[in-house]
Image 1: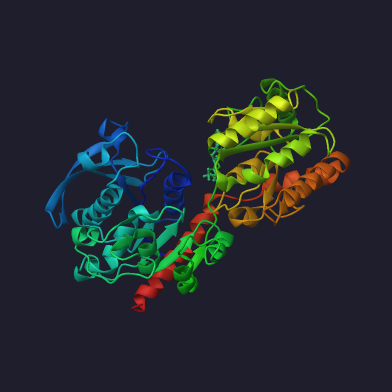
Image 2 (image 1 turned 90 degrees about the horizontal axis):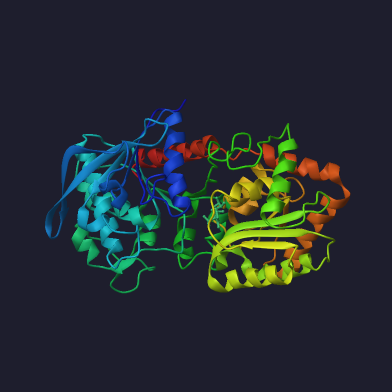
Length: 482
Ligand code: ADP
């Protein structure tokens, strides 16, 4: 085993305490995987409203932080808990005015809220008398910790020489704010090309100052170095390309396991697929579709957002429902942008008896769709990692995906799913037709593809080893004075 490391893990979201998306999933799962590898990982996040109002197992601890700012030292309290089913400590930085609000984000002072949190978290390591070997910060919210560490922080013995890893989950949110935030944090530095005059861009700062940078899939790591995929950060990412890595997110195998998932109508596994047929029938019943074992069920579970490829989906569903690839059923579960909801509502009305559209968020129903459908579509325009295709595979629904980002890294054409390249209706339809053809005429190949998907290893153990490697590279860089 590698040397145990002291890892300071900062994130604005850590499931189950706070989650709006994949960032929260990683915050809750990766530290446990690192702990299992023997590391001393400590998670820090803000104390949001649910923590301030009392969260089971989370206690206030007798530490008072005095967080230095240009308005003087600002006091903050600390709560402590652990990640569920683990001994990984989670520290919550409590500042009532900044974090005790109805939602996690969406306030004019978000950059100040997370800059304060970042600085406070570093201060907390001093109070705990715990000098981390490596700082691991996620997305723009905690990038201020990396910036401070690599600038002002170098003046303090406690922080000197600590390398940092910055993980990009969503390049679209960059955390732009007025330059005065550097006065607030006591940072003196030059501006970056990516920053407009008088502006700080924390996403750019994280990429620029971190010892190592990574994102959540190898293909997305390459795509963001291009003008099309770089959201204005591509030149900076190319500049750092030798320190930029892609590590696929893991899937929480405890939460997503068809052998024990209580939300399914019947459990099943790769060696016992009988339960799957039952799920299929229950899914058809619940969707008000004819219960038939002889035609494919195509499905989608997704946020209805432009990123998800919905602009090339409508026409494909129309062709599918009109029988251009033989008889089929289609079920969608999703909510989001109004015009996409309308698109599915209209298609469902038109293709009554063949299609069902559930336009809401329903975590209890989603597993039945994964565990009862035959084909799962994910035609994303871009996809940093994507969990949907991994869940689908584990639940025996064969994915048809656009080969972008994490989809390209997890789905291999005709091995464990079907892929297409062009972002076009034609390419998507072609891939879906190929899948349906094999489903209809070559059951043996179909079962092999399904089985390959069910047996794929998307575990956090694997991802944890990837992060361990990146930490080691960061430490080696720091040791060589770089
Ligand atoms: P993203 O994080 O961009 O939304 P992912 O594929 O990484 O996409 O993760 C999507 C997750 O959200 C999956 O677990 C999926 O099952 C779930 N999900 C998306 N939409 C819904 C919905 N309407 N109801 C239930 N679960 C949903």
